[in-house]
Image (tube, rainbow, N blue to C red; front, side, top):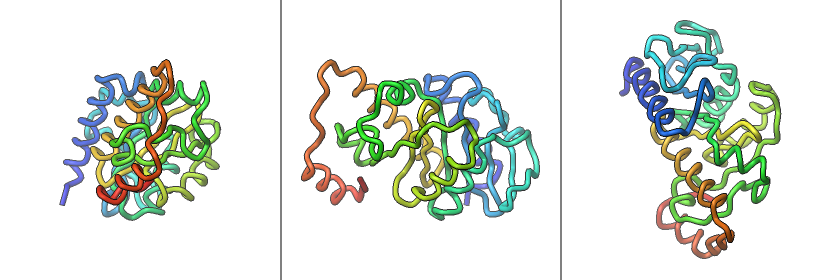
Length: 212
């Protein structure tokens, strides 16, 4: 069983890694983790590259701020994911450049922002739907995400960035990174590649227990 202190340190390590490699900038983005008695979440307007374990906010199951700095304004969105999907142990949100750029240029489809162009995109990420623009922290976004929390591994907030969840903070980070790199490939391609065929996607889902 991972202790609260270990989760605090894992959040800080994940945030520093994402920040140092350019997946997030400034004070954009947030990370959370499930506890037996609530959640940990990064503070509002905190730089993910400079997090301190004791400053990570602790919030009760009822949403009460218990300790640490003031929790992120996206707390409600994170709570909805945890409440709807008991398998989720970590949620990560960044303002990753290529994914945000994709929403400015136009996504592939609203229900699937990128076509299945690589096997690891299918295996590690799956289908990612678009959530139309609302201001950061808007409650209607959390309501929409709640409806999708058990169907997909993440969503793309238009003009803001991806929100990805997983069985740990690190697994959510890895899926987010795969998604951002797939967006980079798609945007950089002078000629857009053909998606993997339906039979190819079906085979990946069957062999690797993936879901598209």
